Length: 354
Image (cartoon, rainbow, N blue to C red):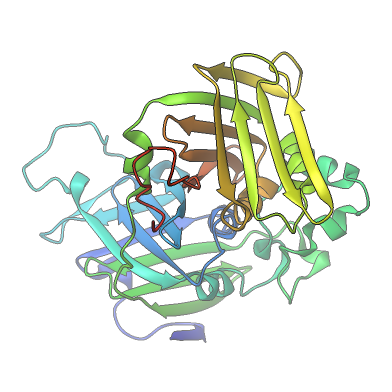
């Protein structure tokens, strides 16, 4: 459920209630940007800690997306301890403290991600669009077959106001230590809207990150996101699987797929302007469900750089560098399990049913 109101609220504000997490962003687009990058399922697990806010979304126990706003990205950030005291933003994470230091304390709950986005973008205008730097806007305008307005249309709020692009919407976020409700207070030009969201028990997730980290990295490619977007746009949407190849010898990095329209293959030599960094220990070829890779296009469309990593068992990590304001960036990561050939002798993939 969601409750929304204008003006003053009843009851004591979050700033005077004990055991309440509270934070403030001067520009709500920072949170909108990272949330839209992972909003491919109904619900997301939200983890609030002393370090910042994280959102995790999982699909079929075979892929996982996560985004993070660090403590430093907020104007104000206060995290409660178990005794009701507050840890201010100015304290160092690495500094020593008493035994009840809340560095390991977390508030965890599940939230309807689309409802959360609807609340954050309730004012419409530029606040409903992910942050886009002038350089990103210029690149979007250069994409073939679509204007800049068309490129951003998918991210616009239904009540978008073109004449109010420079207005920033501030948001205050509060949540009790129990995580049983999430409150948002948004302000634009003196107009205040308050929203209260019902939270749910955290959804169980397979720890794909641990599965990925358990094996050494055999291939790593860093490239401009524009080139990777172009590669995915060339793939046939009817393809069931996508094949990624990394090799210390030519073709180095290859993305290929087969569909009703035929075969598509893109090669990226390591010594071109397309690839900024390339490291490969041995040749690795892995297949992935196209339906599991498709959601990453949300983050890819908002990012400026992409970091592609593959471990020995074929787990794929794609990290996207997403601008959230004029000075700061955040990272969105997608982890995808490979398709496993039951006859290849490899251990079963924990993310896919045998």
